[in-house]
Length: 171
Image: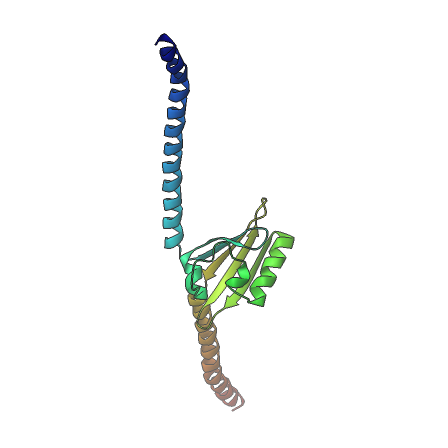
């Protein structure tokens, strides 16, 4: 009888330690879930598209904006970038960024224009950010056309005035 009590008493510190470890694991799991939820919230609210690739060019992270841009049929995490797009410009941009550390390029879809920013991290990951510049490009085009039209419209009357002034001076 006394031997049984000693046997179980020896496990009390071990049992207590295991219970503490389970509690720590539960706390860390909750913390990780909260961080994951926060990350997904931020990614889903971004106006910019974001892709993160590993060193094998497999998709580690992709946000909803990218799925919309490329009309991705399903979650492509773990798949090679070629499952998302076979666009040669983007692929060349990736290759250049892998070699140089960074890269930028313009990318056009049927109705949008994006500026892409490629950045390679020290641990071998590559991020690609898609910034929609369609509205600013349209505004730039409108300004250019307006300036051209104003310049043309002012040249004609100024030419006439200059001609009449010459006639009056020569008189």
